[in-house]
Image (tube, rainbow, N blue to C red):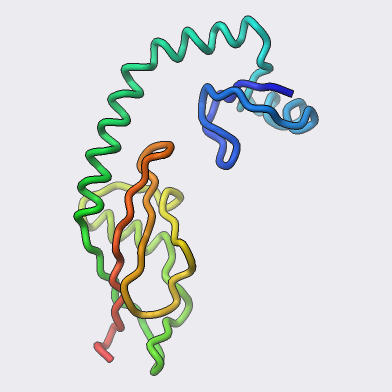
Length: 150
């Protein structure tokens, strides 16, 4: 069943995208929740008109996201954590910790937009990905250091 998304839905699409999903998922969840509408001719026409009107806004958002990526990639973060004798971290570094570091550096990034290639459980330099806008993301280096300088 083809639907038009009214909201960004992770792993499915962004607002205004026409996607194909199983009929039950659309009828029982997406449409009643107001997250999507059926992709018929009139709704597609309304979507096209809405996209034309939002083209300038989207262009501005993309420019802002690219500027943010440039600022973030120039940033080097460092985080002190408790470690054992073998430089293993007690637990792991979370996206919330990285979000607090970014907030201290002057960037208001939601923790849900931060991801790691693999869980950070050791001391060292790791890559952190920050999604700024749809398919625009920044790669930040995070230096994880032991708390007591071990």
